[in-house]
Length: 319
Image (tube, rainbow, N blue to C red; front, side, top):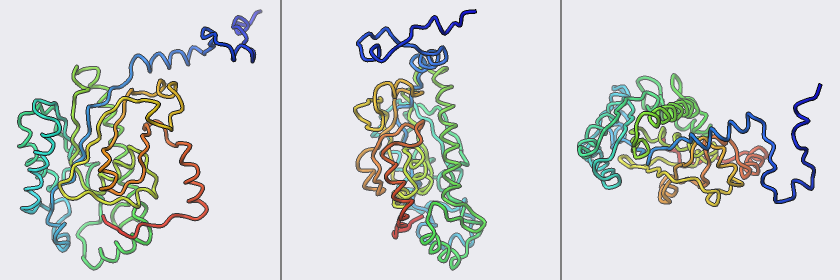
């Protein structure tokens, strides 16, 4: 009995060096996969805007945490003014009549920031507003004693911000894990919206959250290493970080070796940060890396170096 594989033309070395583009043997599975990706790529929203809440009572008086739960800490008057300015800054970026989807931490200070921000965006089409517990601040425990927190933060500086776990609280890694889960939810929702809403790709995603959570969101999205994260710093209260959508181009990213790499991605574009963000947050990593790729060749030297000598924890610690 003849084997169906004998019907396929055998390609020898000389065949692979000629210019006959018709010679290409792919399994049916490979053909289906490429066809699916090329025909049904996910378009990402126009931009993601990350917002750190305005100045809170806890930012000016850490003793507030001794008598008030972290989630109840309100904005100061200065923080309220910052929140209004957030809305004005976003309006300058997106204009009027732009679709908006908002995700916010359910803490009082982020709710207040949202409430004042959204007043400045009343002429825009708000599609979704959702409280998202995965966007909350790192959990530092329950009621916090000032002397204990001073000791814990000193320990964290020695141990490492990403891995240190506060007693009865979370580590940076814990926050990273829930932020990663949230990003997965975003992609599922975008895929659903693409099939049900014609202007999905014009949408502006606004995420109102906390300083550390914001940095861990960026770490996950742009695949910063742990050592790179350790050296980042918080944006100021009321700062916004804008991630603008671009179309993938192999010439823009040395980690993508050729167009075929882009052709197999599940989506056709990605987000970049403005240059000022890297300086503001002390981010050294500027390579555009798709979320589907967990490691790039340029990381190998860094990983080997860190394995051999370790890396220094940033001395300028901020939560």
